[in-house]
Each structure stands twice: as C-alpha cells, then as structure tokens.
Image (tube, rainbow, N blue to C red; front, side, top):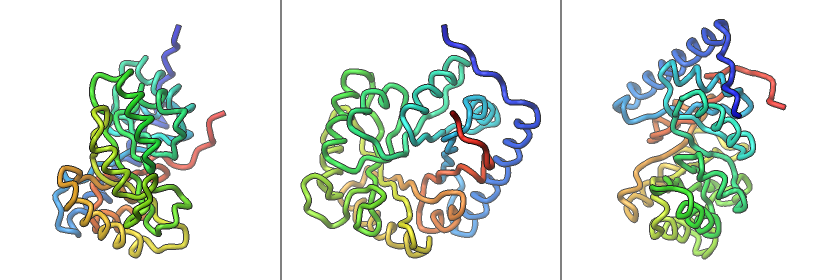
Length: 248
C-alpha cells in the first residue's frame, strides 16, 4: 500500500509561496526587459533533494512543471505525488544512463538531457513499450564543445554524439518528439558568454528543425541572462525552494 506524503507545514507552505512569488517577479521583469511575452517562458521547479510534500505544495500554489536529476529519487517521488492525486508535468534534467530509460519514461513527460544516439534509441524502445504517447525530448548541447558536463557536440559529425546526428535520430523516432535544446553553462564561463553561444547554436538548429523551438537554459543565478538570449524554460531550484538538507 502506498503511503500518501504528509502535507507541507504551514511555515514551509509560506516559504514556498514567497519563493514562488519572487521567482515569478524575476521572470516577469526579465521578460519585460527583453521585450518578450511572459507567456513564452516556463519555470521548471527543480525539486532534487526536496520532499514530495514540497512538490504537492508548489503545484497547489500554481506551479505546473517539476524537474528532477536522479532517477531513483525521482521515481519514488513521482509515485508519492501521484498517490496524493497531484499531477505536475515531470521533466528529467540530469545525465541519464541507458539502463534507466525504462524507469524514466514511466513518470517523465519530458527528458531534457538526451545527448547521444544510443540514449535516444534506448528511450524510444522504452517509450514504445510503456507509454501511449511520444516522450518529449530536448537534446542537451555542450556549449563549449568539450562535453565534460554532458551534451551533444555542435558542428560535429560524430555519429554518436554530434548534435545533428542525435537530433536526427530523435526526430525520426515514433516514440520521441523533438522539442528543442537544453544546455548547462560551462564551468568558468560567464552567463553572458554561455547563453550568447547557445543562442547561436539554437538559431542554426531551428533552421534545420523548425518544429523544435524550445530552449531550456538558465538557473537560479542566471535566469535573467538566459531569458534575454531566448530561453523558453528556466530551471529553478534554490531561489524557489531555499537551501534544505538532502534526502536520505
């Protein structure tokens, strides 16, 4: 029997409400400064290490998109949240091993971190046997071309990890839908440099894949810069949820 998670305390609920209001104001101000419509930008609440009760409270406050980085934690948390009758849109945003594909497609609506042809194939096979609709996929880009933090390689003909080979594989699969690109700013790069480079890559990518218009970039510390350079999704953790102890 699945236990329904305890509700967030009133103090925690107030903390989350205040955090959500602050982030929404930042996003609105960034959109205004960039001359963009607020409706173009979605906030993904990154709830890694936070309990299911926080997810339930955030959804009750109007958040609709939730992101997780690790399958073991995400799978259990999604089950708890569903048991409470709450249905956010789940994004898997961490580096993903192929042997976790079948688990991830059971709860995730979106996988933002596809960066190899082999991973795309694994997700497609899993999606075909588990899901009744295609899995939405963002191809993760290595902005610096090094791939140290994951990501397909722009401009590379590498048949396994080049950006275009990965995108073509995703686009050609029945179990997947190519939605756009995701990136993490390289270590040591200023956000301005990272997201300017990402915007260049995204512009070329949309010429080849005009249906893949989404761009996931920016986190708590740099979401304004990411929005200026075209992000449609910002991934926000600490600015929204605060600093909390990790789950055991």
